[in-house]
Length: 104
Image (cartoon, rainbow, N blue to C red; front, top):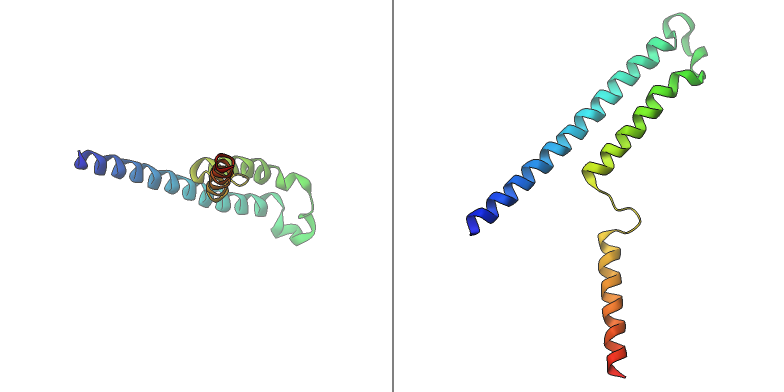
């Protein structure tokens, strides 16, 4: 029984590592491709920094960034509003209230 528990933990950990690896690969490709696209589409060689305020340059990074953010949320599952600490604090608070209600 203990061996199967270890195998389950190992599989979960391996899956988690693969998910994080996939996210970091996605992030790396996002940075490299978007820097490349910014330099190519801005005509940096011909015009220098004059064309960098053109909003068309930022459409791809913006929408791809939304997808990257969703990927980050899926992999790291940050519960920004209701964190684990908040949940534990709330459970303790409710348990304490129940104890005082039963006491009186």
